Length: 446
Image (cartoon, rainbow, N blue to C red; front, side, top):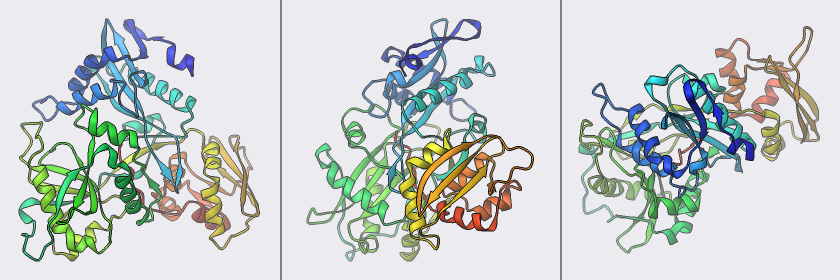
């Protein structure tokens, strides 16, 4: 780990790959501004400026300056990316996860392999510190070349035009929004976790207390969130919401929304939306070419019940289809053994309770063998590449297995899409028990 952190790598044309320091913040921000321009007029993106400063400030709880890999050429940063820690739970079990973020390069050095070298460095550091997954969002198709597969829905929304909000009446309860203070983390987190638990999600995102405090007290970035309490007329907290910190392309996103009592969603949602609308009108519009604020987007990844509630209340909504998280698994046996209690609980709750057997799965260049005894996963080992006459019980391209592991696609759906996904009938039953199709919600913790 020390070597991964300390060594510098000489690249072509006098370029050097190294880890950043806080002194690199301005240069990283300038590069990000160059790379993440907006529209055909190449309007500067102010959010990436503050974000780059946040990631290199040594104050961010999920990323430090020494987690940012940069390519420096003639004292200028020409390519860079940060390795964040992304909080993730799978089936309730914490999974150490790395997240490459704010990946960028100057157009004058593209196609030179600098980003590839950076990604290799980030992956090595992520694995050395014990991460079992890497996840990333970004350019369509691009990150497949680094071993990532589309695997979890990302940023699907129910959009409500503000001019379509039902008017408030005397029958509606009064509602106020107030940002939580640092000492209120426990209250916020209890409501946040209760809302997640009520939805039967496979992959969820813990909200660390240190990030909660950072967003209140020390962040300089406009890329993060701010949790708010929802209060009734007696100043009792009846719910919470998480709002992004700026208006973007005419809307503001509600990243989470929940009430202490399920019935409150019907009685309090309309006044809550009006309260969110009032807050949104005070938020900055950082890009002048964007339309003025006109809509509220509520995140509905993971089949959030908010869409049904909006329909029941007669509130018009437009569905914004989700994009997708890329997921990378470098060591499948290690990951599955880390999650053995999740897999064993699925077996225990199924028709295969007490199952014993050996299951061999080929990924064509390699594969895994799972050894089960009386419902206990004793071992997961790596298989060598298949030879002629080899008889595994199932086969997947690696990206297809990642999709079923994450619950994004069922075995039958993958079989319909990939001709090289297959399993024996008995193994198909087992795989559907171990890796069922399940909704997830993975928040990008900026």
